[in-house]
Amino acid sequence: YDEIWEAFFNTMLVAVVAAIVSTILGTVGAIGIFYSKKKAKTMLTNLNQIPVLNAEIITALSLTILFAQLFKVNFNFATLLIGHVVLTVPFVVLSVIPKLQQMDPNIYEAALDLGASPNKALFSVILPEILPGIFSGLMLSFTLSLDDYIITAFTRNNSFVTLSTYVYGITSKRGALPPTLRALTAIIFGAT
Image (cartoon, rainbow, N blue to C red; front, top):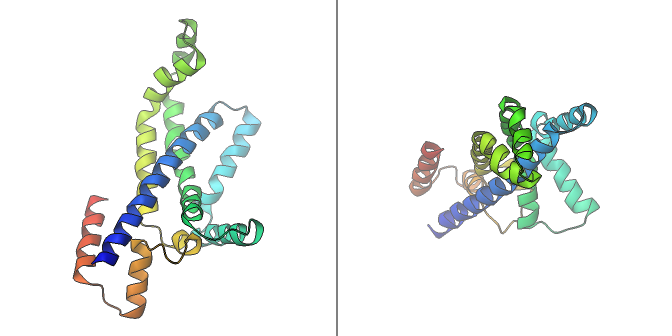
């Protein structure tokens, strides 16, 4: 049972941290893309689509080659986290941009005209307006990270076990899952 709980807590740790980092980066990226000039906006939007359109195995292999050959780093929690963030940031951007498009553009300018600094207007006007998109991006990135196997298998240290890698290891050796693990995965599935 200890192995299952360790895998569960490792999975939750990666999913929560990746979701928070992805939400921050994705929100900042979406705001930057939205307010960019047309040429830069098109380029950044197309660049954001690459991880969404690529097969996950391509992203995982690319990250593995990048970490092992180019940077020559040992696989650890940071490489795993970077892999999950690369996977989930585009989905946060795709969740936030529609809320920016729905927002009345005059609200930000009105806040500036009424004496708010650009930062104050950002935090008190824009962020509350796009909060539903930010929250949906957070939840989407959490669930994507929670059940990811391919990027996890390619970018983790072998001593760091998540539920997906634990389940794969159990089924490849014995074939059947322990009842505790079946119950836990059913609870996670229901919660998701």
